[in-house]
Length: 346
Image (cartoon, rainbow, N blue to C red; front, side, top):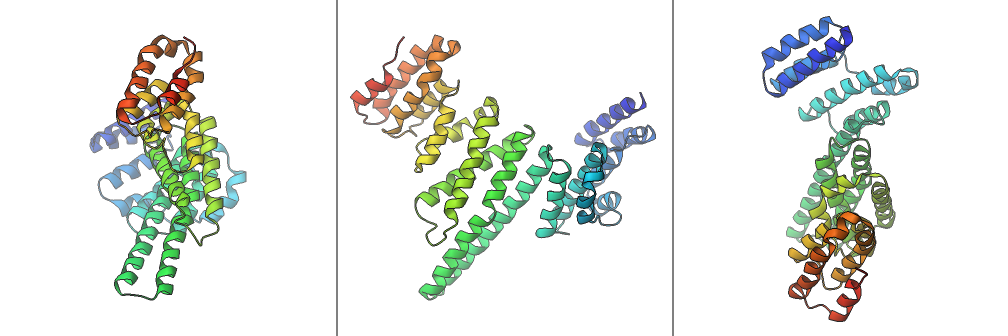
């Protein structure tokens, strides 16, 4: 009973802190602490952080900096409660160390990796690791691009310019696989970071595959392996993520249905077989993002779900017919091909 009461006081403190009622939150945390709630310490540190006392918050979490290597060695001997508390402590401290500039680079990555090892089924560790790698990715690409522009302005030799171009390409390759993997894991373990992880993951995949298709990575042999690894991650997600996850990114998916990479289009067609087919077609045609060749492809991919879903069958004639009639207005499509795709049993 004391534990349940302590949890109630903790949730009260969390709600008060989010509304910036810090006095109320502090009082609730005093009650939670007296009832033996271990997580009250973390909430107290978050109040200090929100009030701008970052150093005091860090001191509360780690009076002496934690040796993450030692923690990693102790993981097999820790029970689930100890793992959860250690993961929360390290995650909060690492976030604030990174935000305040006290730690950067490999030290931050090592601490986030320990969090994912302590709580491999938790979305928070994976998301924050991916977010930090994404930050490093953007920073290094910007620095390499700036260096390339500076050399171009200084009329550098062709060899120097080529070296600078390769550095830009390698900067794009360095972290992208790990970023996509981390965002993928955060999605597989909960919807908490859905609206941050999925759009960014798809953007990285779309843009990188488009550049690879245009041979912008010439001279970098490992690009093929990176593209394959990204495709494997996407296939894994399409097989395991709930359908409503993809609905949140529907406009983004529709906008890339005419992607230049056939492998990307093939994987997008998996999404086109879902129950949201009518939305795919209506949105895609209405904003004129589908090319003449892609319109029949998308309409054809919709057929299995249109004929098997009773909910869609009831509205298929009206919506599907409207889409068919809209395509010639949006682009000059071979009418014979369109009629061939549109013909199915009523």
